[in-house]
Length: 79
Image (cartoon, rainbow, N blue to C red; front, top):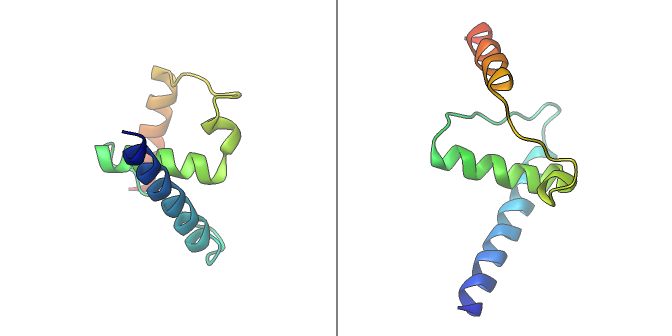
């Protein structure tokens, strides 16, 4: 089982590296979020890539209903 975890850690590191490289090529990179499992995985990788203090659990907070309502309002405004 250790080999499987090592392989997953390697894939995660590679994905984080790719995110950083791609984001470095743009002035204002963006990440589209649909709420599906792929988007959630991508957001988690982005947290680890660009906000490692949150990924480690330092300063992380729970998402509230108010946060979700504000996010949905912003999405509707953009659309």
